[in-house]
Length: 608
Image 1 (cartoon, rainbow, N blue to C red):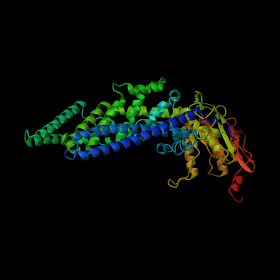
Image 2 (image 1 turned 135 degrees about the vertical axis):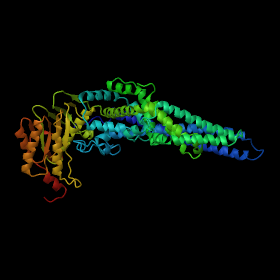
Image 3 (image 1 turned 90 degrees about the horizontal axis):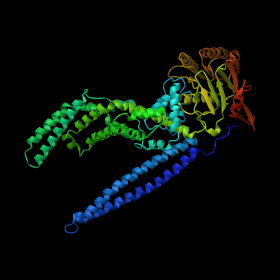
Image 4 (image 1 turned 90 degrees about the vertical axis):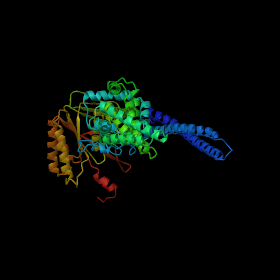
């Protein structure tokens, strides 16, 4: 059975489809321009080569005949590069909307950023709730193009925010929800691939102030002036020697002085330029994305605050980043074999290295702030994109008195909306825990993940998959995907009780805990399981926690009876239809009256 499906074509789907068609038309158009311009370049080159052949023959043609083809070739090169750039932008735009349609059509899993490297070790709920990995919540949400944006979004999913922060994010996401043009523009900015350098590394290399020996800006200015003067002297002496105004001695003296000066600054310059060339791509993306944000106007307090952090200085951050990018590009040019002799003569590395050091002295201290602002904006934009694609998903309402959780028509955000069976869950006073029984594959674990995942989204400031959700601040703690470990030498039971201990430890903080325990104490005998389960749940309830516990063991249903009215039994059932075992995934009050384990074993051919 299914809930009533949403409309087959949502507004977001229709808009993505329309724009995708338009962008594909642009790709076809500029692909044609690219081919024709490339052909024209070849023709002009061949014409020029033919005229050059005739010009080499005395008396046939003047060399001036090559002027026209040369100018035409240069013009075609410029025009061709513009067409190719437009083509690349159109292709990236196609990929942007194709990815959006993949999310709406539920074929997105495995095609985005899984974020497994962002999963905190021994986190109390992230792995259990499928927050990271292929087909995860992070992959569904993340549209960030920088590593800082990915880290910010991952941190929000793994660290519940405070009420004021949640409300600020909700207002920002609501403002950004309809700004599809802005999200597309951000996706097209910068280079063809996302920026992958760790923000800490970027800050360490580009933002380290005076990486040499803590030279002051005045010292750097004097050093740059002297280096420029010595380089100019070497060039003048070289020109004078070549024009026979004087001999080689002045050039040798000038070059020696310049070389000695560069040698004296070698250690400082080497430290100043160490690692900067690896940042060229990231700085290009960062500069272009900051330039996009600097021109925006926002109304929500959080977005205005982020914008103010970018624009409070005299020069826009994008221009400052672009300046560093140009300096690094100049530094890279010294690797050109044709330019290398001249670069050595004019102290190219020394002069550019000192210029980079001067940039650090004036702008380097701000780069961490710029990265932080961009990362937060990308995280908000990712949540806004999800909100735009799921307009029926509301924001959660925060209540001050807790612990409290009331979700009406809760569904799991990773399930297709049309296939998502929804249930109501309420936890508060007096009811603090639901003991969920049911047969295999009936939906018990999915219910726990539904409650936990929606709680995570709500406390990150994102929309939730529900008709409505009211909750207090809660700290989730989950025990759903516990495995034994050969490397650690621990059994599944031992790993489970370690996680239970971790969840109990969470209750010592001020924020109430939402515990989600799947097949509690599954790895021990029935007697110990019954006694231990009641003791664990009773302990959590005395510590101001609320939650759900699933079980196959019907004896554990007695736990709810022992803890009533703070606990209650609910169940999921199955039924046979046309000889097939089926599930309706509806939560009902009471204890399940049957098991389907034998039927499932027989269905796969086991003789039981």
